[in-house]
Length: 412
Ligand code: KDG
Ligand code: MG
Image 1: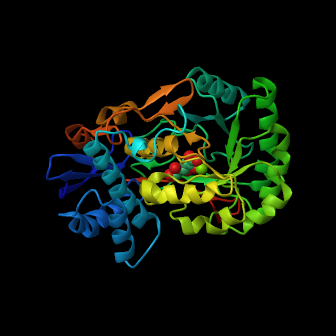
Image 2: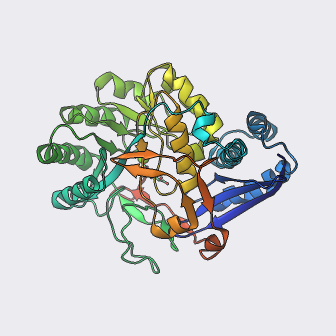
Image 3: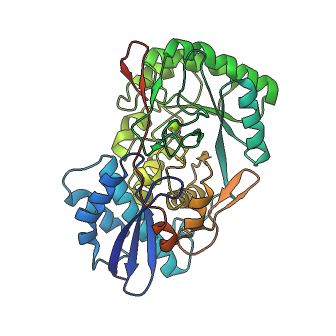
């Protein structure tokens, strides 16, 4: 099973996706996701110019060896671009191995450890009424765990809230499901931590009063607080029994979480911008979080993320793999296979893709009673309609950024 063709396919059905397609001399094809939101073309160049020439002729069965070769031979290690490119190769090789064996990838990873994957969706609203409607709509769609984000009085637009784009070509489009703005420069959002810290506990109190104590609730701080502010937030949310509080401080400094941990029992999650097991070393060893947020796509693929999760399992830390719309259907399928197989699965983030995306990527996963299952097709269970993909060319898109009231750039 030697690789005889490697294509990098960029398509933008509802948003941009970068997919690596590997073909073998015995007629199989495998897919890998290399989408890096807002910096997609950097990964395209890395793959096309530097990785594809290395793949032609290699034995597609040698997944670990190929991973080590791509990682170590580059000399310049880690980082989102390198690790997304390696992830795409790794996923495509697992897809090929599954097809060659006639087995879904989760079977190759040891088989199912559970019947399905508990998944959470994103409810949001500019005010309580809008938020409650959004929670109800998620419950109707079957979600059994829900992330809560709301607007903060005095701030025009912040992360995770339904909002309308003002850019030409995208005007009026809500982007609670999609922060990246197509066809324009980055949107400027505003931020004030004190207002946020005052407001968020009142929102969770209202949600608990309306929806009761059982529903697992999550919240994303999106890297905006100092350690002491994060500690205050964790403490003030304790009465509302969160499933997790995510990304409370900027991810570069693991030590910040020590202080947060000393002050609150609210469970913590981190890692959507991490790329390797080395980013997690201290955090896992010191048990500074409860959930690992990496996406398969941004953490070197199934091979590497499995190592992170196996390490985490020694410390009773569970998975909470990143699954926003910028993880493609291929990346989501990889997460589902991995999540089904590992013992320390926690929860899977799941935002539904748009209908154009679903028409370009044919998928075999199921969504029943709040649980995902990757299906039993050989490999990852996703096929790419290349003609369909060709109908949606790349559109430049940027993530927003934040400024404080005095104009200072803040973490977004
Ligand atoms: O590309 C950035 C998004 O994926 C990110 O902002 C989403 O924080 C996110 C989440 O938890 O889904
Ligand atoms: Mg997040």
